[in-house]
Length: 54
Image (cartoon, rainbow, N blue to C red; front, side):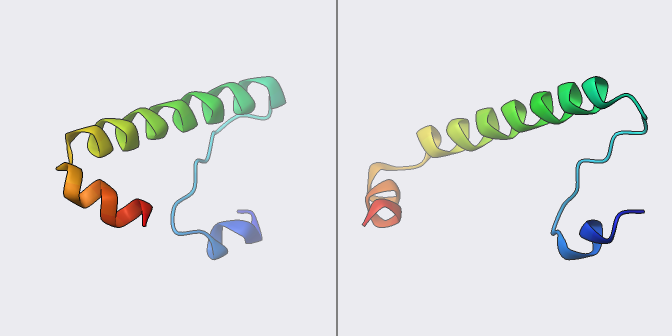
């Protein structure tokens, strides 16, 4: 296990030795996380979003 895993709150670990496959899965995971954050941000009331931006 990478020593970096101990430093992270969450880790995207891909059980592969193929660098391209690992990057592909990590990219997919990142896009999914962005979609979830965006969906939650758009669902929040405007006053909540203003507090976050300020």
